[in-house]
Image 1 (cartoon, rainbow, N blue to C red):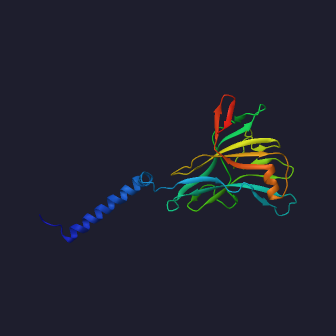
Image 2 (image 1 turned 90 degrees about the vertical axis):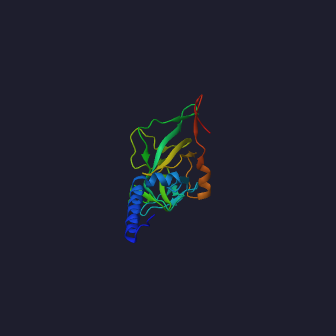
Length: 215
């Protein structure tokens, strides 16, 4: 059996390289996910106590709350990432949670949205604004767009559960549910404010006989 010549080996190598490049171009993402090498997005609440901010030129202070979107596989960036409000539950008069009807999801604003692209590439961690509160005003969720029929604010003595999920062109995270409840008291003291405005991760919301309830 004749062995290939040196020139033939070169041609074989080029052909193999070309075929490999085509396979990567056509099925690279699928192969990465098949072997667990693709991006893996996760969401978490950054700080249940929030971040106190005193804007320049204003006498009132704000307290912002953020969610972190992070990629466990930093070597494989997630493209065009959006953190979306996919569900919202508010209290009805009988004390049960009621799912608000939404026509599509709403994207949360990124932290420093005026200089942050609307669609992010997530290798390193990134942060989105969940909402904020200021003295004498309600807690306000911060999607880029607030439809008129979307209950984006939380009044005193009320509670809401926000369901979030991060989406990218090549992956998506598991849902994250955050419960927000407020007794109406605002203070700039961080530890004291955490007793009045409680923001925490919860397991989720399930349908029950009387409406919806926490898991």
